[in-house]
Length: 283
Image 1 (cartoon, rainbow, N blue to C red):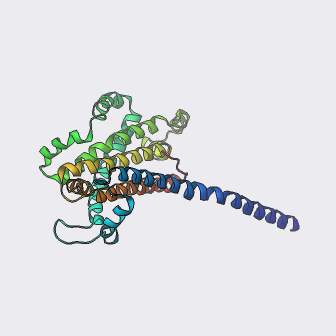
Image 2: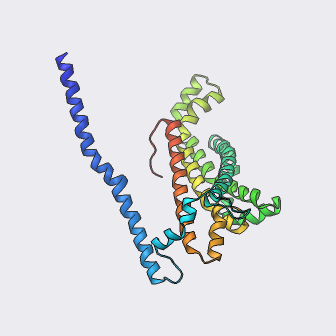
Image 3: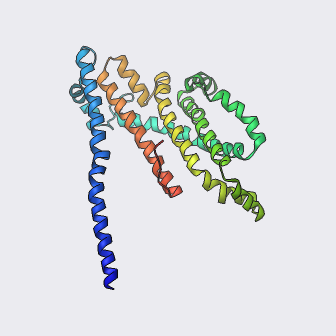
């Protein structure tokens, strides 16, 4: 009993010592270094603004000019006069619809390519041809098909988010150790069971990597698409404020776009940890 108590005391002391050692490192890596990097960007902006002060505001001037957007992000002052929170929600809706539709199509296609050599030979040339096409090149085709801006933007997001998920899913399926599949054949495991019990769990990290890349590209593309199609959205807000030479609001939109992209990637990473029960690594 005394021996067990001594072991527990030693473990508690070791844990406390490890936490004391890790705490400064965690503070440095999570708070201090990112804050220094962000401060460097602010200082660079400030220097450039002072050199071109007629057009570009300094950080304090931009903050003061955007206080209404920051303090009242969900105001409604007319049909075309909405707070930046509503614009962000409109863009997120388009991105999530297109991204989810793309995932529904891309993951089964990736499984088909990874499991079937004839399918890979048939579909790989198509993927390699369409993958390098600029997302904005699809916009005129989408407008011709749908004749409306909103479904056209969703279609562009859909077609853009296909390729990374297809490629990574196929790579994950093809990377499943052959020994696992051989054992499943010896046990006469049905094909659907092999997929659900062996291939699917082994491919999940690859699938989530593809989904994270696809979502990042989708969020990147929606800003450019909304600049061209107009309407309600964060991308059109950027273009509209630039047309008015209001760079203070453009800087605010850039910050919001970047922060939203970070949150989306973090959310998918946490979903991956929940599904795979493994810690994620940086992309």
